Image (cartoon, rainbow, N blue to C red; front, side, top):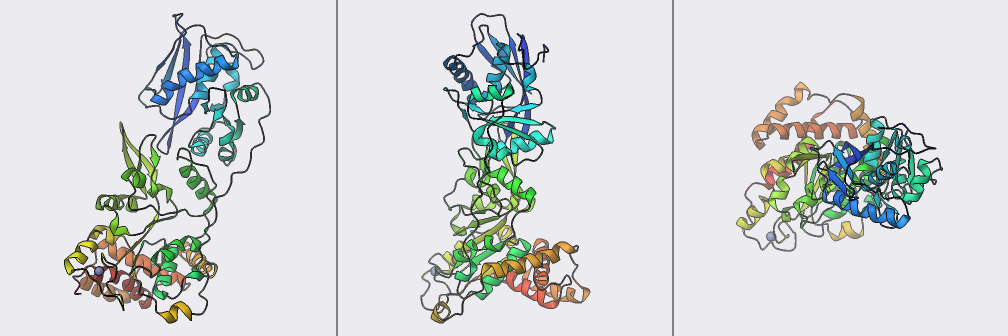
Length: 502
Ligand SMILES: [Zn+2]
């Protein structure tokens, strides 16, 4: 600060600096706002340092708000510089730091009161503070930077208060914010509402033993799963029950996932205790799936971070979108091109795809005949490229259930029982480094590599699935049955791509 002052006695200063934070995708950059009187008497506010459209509009909004509240508008021109200059400033969070800076220049507020505080919020003309998106991400970053206090709109306070060790001050209005800065106690903060628990239960699924088994294995090792079968075989029912088998997120993951979801504008923040389940329609845009747009927001791939991305009718998705999945599935993050570089969003997800066996859906149906030509079927199946198919660890062909299975089956096992086995198996996987394939099983795997032309990636995934199968049996060491079952789940993918006679 240029001139020392105290909270009790604001004094006239010729310039001041205010710290705030700016979102760039899911990353946070510190921004320093420098305000200084210039010579002119035009009462202009001149912005420099790559301010975005929303920031430029803030200038008029702030002036209107100050006049309406009867607060002093600087009577000389003010130069406002956003530093660093090479970072484009977007978002709606700059209003509050900017107006507080003007009040410091005008002598209404002491510069000292803003020390050690990070400030952000959007200002309405009547002085109310509107929430910003990404408040939790900003608060997490503020703590990492050693800042102790954050002053923000009251609607963002519950999110920011999830961060331990940070004093969160929520204000409904600019007047309340000024009160807090001069020593008033901020309003109590509500607890953030939790996102609902997954309710769909596996007990509703009749028959489909191999589908249920694959779901349990997928939940254990977070394996990608492709479900294939005629309409009505329960592909969607199975997929939507995967979240009920997954353990709750750790405290660290809860913050990570909640912060990612909080980056969506106009989104009601919810505490994400459970792995998210996202199921975009095949008409989703590229930005909707991968991320992008203005402001830069995460796509479905990132909203499924630490959870499940379910692509129903996966063959109906444009091929370019499906190919865009490959890199995030390897890197657990997605890079989104933006002006002046790229932004990175976390995307550590489990992919579940569902599709019909052929365009009409009846290929392999015991009672209905498929009407597709072999060429149509082959073209349909090739919509999933070989590299993408390679990334599915488990492939299940779901048979059409017969009347006996639908009506007479004993009550099926519920999700809680399966989830308990999954939890126990994950404990086995976490207890030891991944077991190598025993020497006795190597000839078996070699035969499979030759017979099915398995790629290096496929072999690694077969071994990972075998480890999950062993863990479900409370073992670390692999036995022949684990390898055979893992190959059974992989073989579906291989045979499925062979030319089919109908
Ligand atoms: Zn067909």
